[in-house]
Length: 132
Ligand SMILES: [Zn+2]
Image 1 (tube, rainbow, N blue to C red):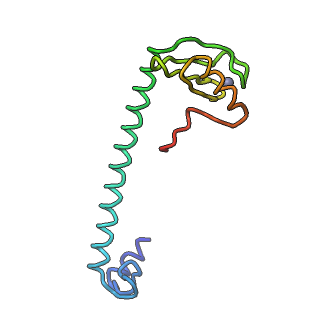
Image 2 (image 1 turned 60 degrees about the horizontal axis):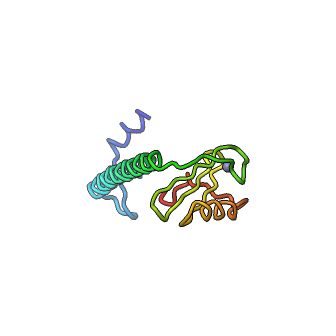
Image 3 (image 1 turned 30 degrees about the vertical axis):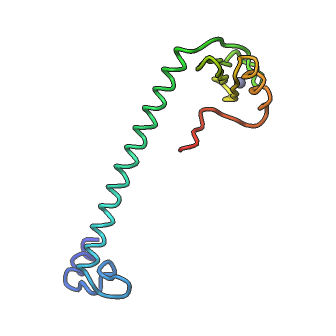
């Protein structure tokens, strides 16, 4: 590796990293590399912001659910007593199994349960986020 870099110092035109679209142009190559690096840094910053926003949303959602947990019942899919029903609004109930992930919602508790039972075997999992 060290031998190659010394060689390329003496013969920069033989270093493939100094070529751009078939033209020997170390300055342009350096500029492009710099821009690519800056783009990577910018992408990493955006990804970090998105991850933070998701985490914040997740925490808010958990806090809201913790306050509105109505009952924990037997799950119609996995049978475990892990089906949480939340009353998030007066006319919005949400069921989520903490084990298998099945879920359903409705304007009443009964309809939320019905919607959950109707989704049996569909492979739903409320923990899978669409934005990922
Ligand atoms: Zn379940």
